[in-house]
Image 1 (cartoon, rainbow, N blue to C red):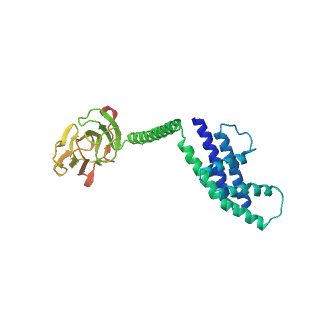
Image 2: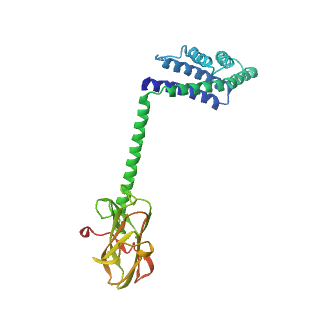
Image 3: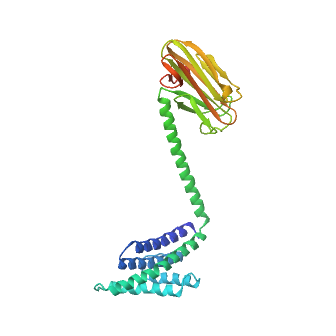
Length: 320
């Protein structure tokens, strides 16, 4: 069976399913009976398509549908009572074509036929669907694979576009840090640039960015520290694994090889005049979880706070 033949057969069988569904959805016995008759004709069209014939009219499709049901009876999938009940559908349909006043007895007969025939037709459709699934050509699975790859690529493209849009908007904002992530712990092979607000990042066991492993990476945080007024400022750093803080091109805090989170605490006090100072924080992850914090206090900053806006701005181009 070719893929085109399979698609045509499946479409014809789907038409049977829809006709049966209309029989269930309607509360009128006459409409339900018409739906079942349409299902029988659709079953005949399915048989014609399976036989490689072109279907141009519904002439003879009813008998073809009964032939399909007879073949299922020979496979012991339907009973003789099911076939006889389904034969009554045609008789009742012919009587419906002739104009007649409403008859309660006729309505009761339709309801009885519909009730008896619906389970048999549903069973027949399910059996034929199972047969058709077992005859699926190899090209069907290749098409499904292509569609899956197509939608996966589309989803990835949309995700990347949104990610880059968010990153670009963040980098355009002058406030905050500019963070460059490197694939190796020696600050080589940069892979991503991000915009972060405050220097208080808990990565846990996750990778910091796309195309970077969970272990063995590094990050460089760059910005301009805006000192609001003259005074003495206290800085406190802490990280897993190592880190180094450089303020105005001088090392302020250094804990490059700490034993653990608690041992990585470093403190420093420095007298600063109001203005902007270049600040760089280098952070390395060798293995396991990663986390880094840099807090400060002084001047109008009364409590220890993570270094972030409005006192941190991205570096200007001439400082990169």
